[in-house]
Image 1 (cartoon, rainbow, N blue to C red):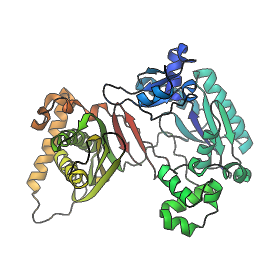
Image 2: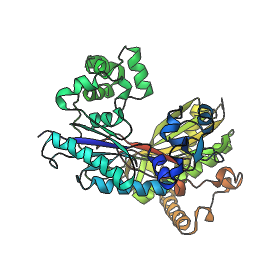
Image 3: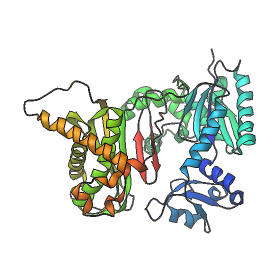
Image 4: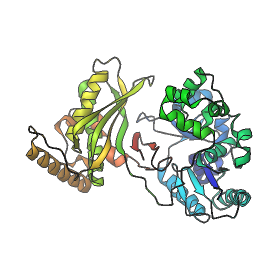
Length: 434
């Protein structure tokens, strides 16, 4: 049976919701931006008048105002966006029970078996597009193909308020002339590598010898080659499906640049306590700890990770290991840090059998875990400040963040069993990678 896969992408979603709330913004160049005061001042989305003047998602507020003088900005209202995202998914569910979200504003829909033919699928997405506009006042771009990768590509080809169909028989004429950077999972670094090999279009990638791609990119090169040839067979997850969690992390743009080891320790403990609490809630422990950072002027970023001998979800151990990683990669302080993050990966059940060693203090581990649970219960009931580490009192400004309370989790994988999403909100980035 021929697969019929759609990908729906709400146009300028956050900005569109704001324009529904305030119609006077429709003809005014404006952007939804983070807080300048909290140093989270980046453009989350902009309307089309602003985009037409060069405003792009991810720009710093000051950059957006430079390219578009007089730009009007509004703060984000996440609950409104979640509410409207739910309304749209309710409409999706009238067409199929296989709807796989990709963030708040995008989703794949598997129409196979829900419509009698591919041509009927074209009629269905045209009807869905008009229904979303009529009932919710939002516009959407939809792609239709026989696989998820090309459906996503189609939704990006025409914006706003449009749909693109990529039939199996015609995909080479439609897809192969497109820039290789348009293909899902081809990021900036991979695109630059392809360009250095004179691979400029998706067709170039599709016709490149797989041996070369494997030598240049490893297994990822083979996956991208399959995508370019329309060979993606990954399934659309059923509505409500949650992929297994493979990592839990928090990162934050700090209230000020970090300049000393003590600064880093304060933020690391705040982040590690959030990671620890959420892993305990999930009944998980990490076998690998990762530290990530961004420098003060946002010109350099990096990450380091290490495998640990004994799985842990204890915040002090997570923070101590992350600090050791920091010292290895940044301990000589070549520049201040603007943003740091901590992540626990290679997750296992916290009740899984553990290999003991002769020098392991089992009593300490059991007592530390019990203490951690009690502290988490107190904070959940009375707030994060009810009990704090002494180091947090050294700099109340730095330690003012509550990483667990302010983070937002969207556990949505790009494909079942692979991929993932990292969502930034309120200055905190939460990663749950499936």
